[in-house]
Amino acid sequence: MIRTPLCDLLNIEYPVLQGGMAWIADGGLAAAVSNGGGLGIIAAGNAPADYVRGEIRKAASLTEKPFGVNIMLLSPFADEVAQVVAEEKVAVVTTGAGNPSKYMKGWLEAGIKVIPVVPSVAMAKLMTRIGATALIAEGGESGGHVGELTTMVLVPQVCSVTDLPVIAAGGIADGRGVAASFMLGACGVQLGTRFLVAEECNVHPNYKEKVLKANDLATMVTGKRLGHPVRSLKNPFSRDYWKAEYSDMPDEELENLAVGALRLAAKEGDLQKGCFLAGQIAGMVNKEQPAADIIREIMEEAEPVLKGACKWVK
Ligand code: TUI
Image: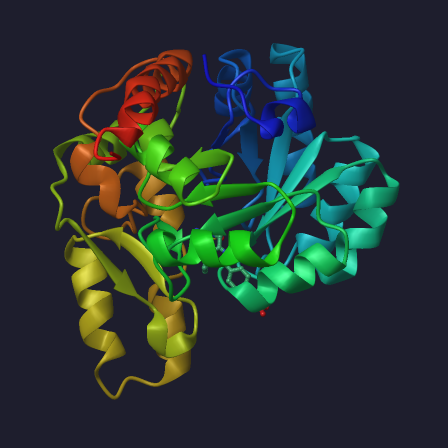
């Protein structure tokens, strides 16, 4: 059995978080992950605060276990959602795509455990200084909004500058990824792409099929020109966007090209115009199964890998 300090900190059985996937990770998926012994996370994405409140209440009706909310800091509703998580007394808040400093005091006073995604050492130091509960070091292998660094180089550098528990994310989908994360100094992992194909994940079936069929080279990064790089599966949308990005199209027009594309992928399964966010590990995600089985399977796989980790040591 594997137990790390993160389990005690978050009152969970396995040190596994489910990534906050915008338009995808709802109260149903979060509750299934939490019921499976991990920490389920509701993605606020760009949704209004009332939607998030509804999903929090839905998750609370489906599980007695703790769960979290991911706040996407580029959202126009971030301020309102920040308020809602405090009012609803959510156990854990994770943040992405920005600096959550201005919310930190309020959340901590509300008794919320705050776990920001940090894409760099500087952000890890800042979040440690202002009282974060733990850190998610997410490498650019992940799906969605990505930083510059890979998981392999980010996690150990973050671990070197903080005493907080570090959760590795980006490119992890099986027990080897869990074991490798622990070797780098993390005491937990966050998985997005693998949970995207969980049975309890309500994303459009076309989305799941695209992930299940993806190979190692199936993703690409677009959006660098506008300062918001995102990793998604290659399709007509991502290829057209990439071409537009490297053309003389004005920034405003480029920005409009992407409006609604995440929803089109997640809700309509639009294979042409949708933006299917997924991590590079999609090539290894080959079966749909209950969230609880995913968690149990990866942790069972990690055990022999970790026990065999000293096999070359004489
Ligand atoms: O946030 C994510 N992944 C996401 S968010 C998302 S929705 C979206 N919609 C429109 C544009 C962009 C995204 C889809 N996937 N992952 C966590 C993450 N956070 N990755 C990188 C960061 C990050 C980047 C910069 C965290 C902090 C940061 O700070 C910069 C600063 O100094 O403010």
